[in-house]
Length: 70
View 1: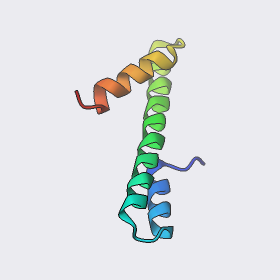
View 2: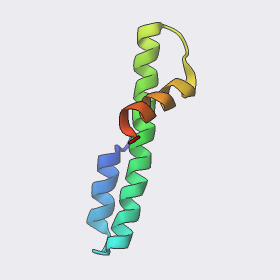
View 3: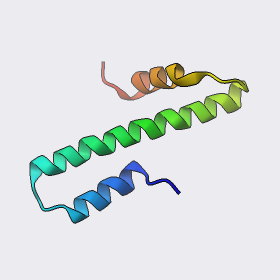
View 4: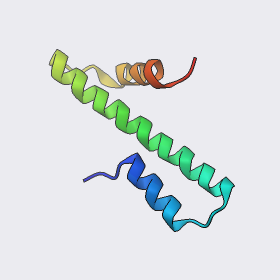
């Protein structure tokens, strides 16, 4: 089973000394993992709905429209 972004974040914060700069770096890394997981989930759902390969571009657009601030 793949490690989720939340699992990664918890484990890193649990094992890391209480340094705010280090914790911020861990948060950024967890957000990268989360973004990739969301994009992958979107591709799977979109493929299931459309029954065709929509590729990385649509999942990237979905992520930007849904999660990135404008």
